[in-house]
Image 1 (tube, rainbow, N blue to C red):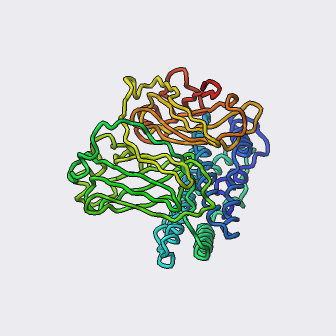
Image 2 (cartoon, rainbow, N blue to C red):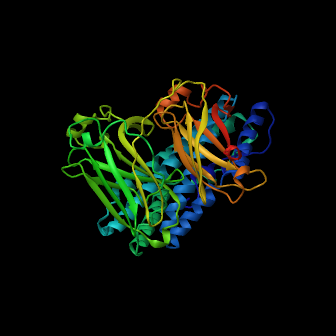
Image 3 (cartoon, rainbow, N blue to C red):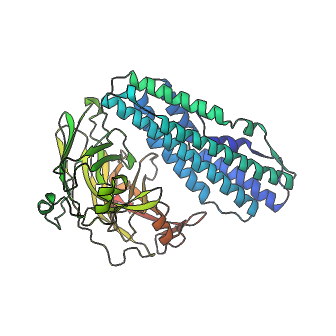
Length: 498
């Protein structure tokens, strides 16, 4: 089970169809066969799982974590959505499919927990205290998920047996369930984590910061930041920060946050979080903060990186929450920004910088004037290009829309007659309906490139409430049907970018 997903084993061996007679049996057969063939053609999650596990045992933790972040987890998310967006008439099949979705989500949660554990190990190694690392909480969470997987698989087995009793043409492969053993799952996960720790502890690790693309944002300030920097009791949170790369990764910033507040630095490479540039920094008595990280020269590849600085009061002490709100609701000003935690909406103060990861680059974290369109949040969705920049090996694209903040965006490149797999990116809609992303550039004429931009409603509870859990409330010319609901699809032809 270490190198395979639980649900792929179940899907392949749990239900065996020896022949379909009734229409209901036929639908069930089509359900199983369709999902097997569809997943086999569209996804390579088991292949990626085996790849990242093998990399760990081959003493390549950096590459393993990259595969986990960029391939395994995104594919898990795509598969969860694929099963959710499948419609059936037979109530028995609907019930069975919903239980399978529970298993899928637990498998995704498991991989995300493993990712968090690995990132904690890497961070401890960089800070030189890996011998003091305590992974008990993470491992306990992993064991709890394994227990939940076991329970969910048993529930799936019960539902499958009922179908087997109802339809003579359906049989059960008993071996599938005998392989789902919690103690074996826990032992396998423990072995993987121990191997990862041992490999990382034995390597000379530098921070392999992933990328970074400099684009200084030319926003005119709607407030005079300097007027607020010395006002540390003001709920209008402000940042003034800059990052530069010159042998090291250096971040220097000011804020009006109260002493001891934590500023969070996160970074994203084509929409995927980069674990090597993920830090928590405490501000001093003046609200200032700084960070310096060593850089591996070999990693200075010029790739684009989106840097995000944030302050999230829900993680802070009582004094901070009294000033800013327990969920950031009292924060004011243009830095105020929604974010989600397990789909639940909270507020924080956010600022962004865009930089290319190479020596001599620097970028200032910007301040935005959110100009919300009159029809912001309308169900009839529109979007249009605002700015496209063509770089040596990627495109930097900014779009306008009336989409609600927190709506999820996925972009993918298509080129007629060209295999463009893997040219993808992700982002989230900003408070004014705009969104910006960088996406890898294929080695073809830009005039032939089409960027397919999709918007879905399932990133946050509030977007699900507005657009429907499966986008069923979306309206307009950009709407496309899915098996379970709807999504927004916009085709951006770069040949029109004259």
